[in-house]
Length: 230
Length: 201
Image (cartoon, rainbow over all chains, first blue to last red; front, side, top):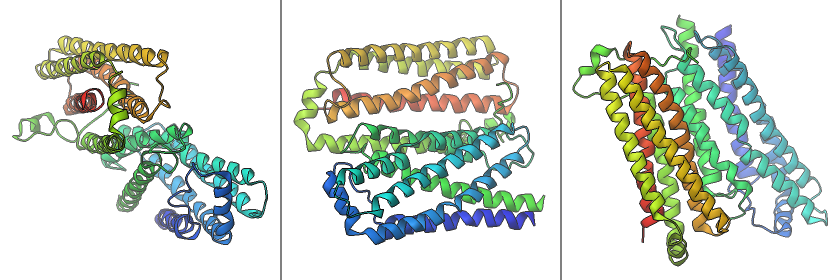
């Protein structure tokens, strides 16, 4: 029963990935991001042009992001199995992961608000909602870094004869923690590589996250299988 | 923090193998991943430089290559201390290994002081990251590298602590090798970064 429940948690993350990607990318049209250099009028026109696509895409993301929660719980559950690893790391991961969900949920609702009355004359309100949403979703690196560091430390601490995760998973997490850092720079730039649509502040962390997500997925899949066999 | 034991799968006896990879494989996952990210940063820098070579050349001339060169020497020296420390640790000269690692740490500290001095001078002259694209890259590339130096200094201190206690098993040696590899990477990144930002014409 435990194995089945864990596999449900694991695959729920795949559902998250699918719904969020479809909603964000083709349906809402948020990838590549609408540039921060756009004027308020251009930003408002973006929301007015594809209003229902944006609303639907965000709804899909909203539905999808919930499925990330069981996956985060699953990581902590497996972390609790690690021998000699202080349990507090599993809780830090749980909180970091929950906060990561929050910083996706809040922007979804801010964009939804922007798309709620696309006919509004005051285009600067739309621009501000869009600014806030992008900055929250793309710049807020703190919870993600705490999540990565807690997983990485826990893996290095694991002294069991049969390790829950291979040790290199720890280093992927440390690498991911550093990969988040350039996102912090987007507060200074409206154009260029460090703007929220830039290669180093947006695409690099996004690709790093995709790699991290796949590594964790495979490591968890293996850990569940080995737990069952033990 | 003594609970943070870094063990490796390879026992000491296996270390005489002909092709020995220093540290554990995970360290190399990190090093290669990190160098890929830096390579991307360097490529983006080169691309932006190509867009406006006149601005980049003019801005570059305001940099003090002397600081950069001095810091290159500091990092190379500290890498050398780390190599000597590793040799000492292998021969169980614990105190000598620890002392050499502390010297490597002090080189890192010197690097940091020079960096603060250099940043301070630039900021006092009104040259900040938002001045132009060159300074944006100058601060961000050297700043990101500096984050790595600070992490490395903490690692080197841990290594000194471990070395002073003595090498007790494959795990200890693997930790020292992994840390040394990371410190060499920080050095190597600077050796690419220094000519790219300070010298490239």
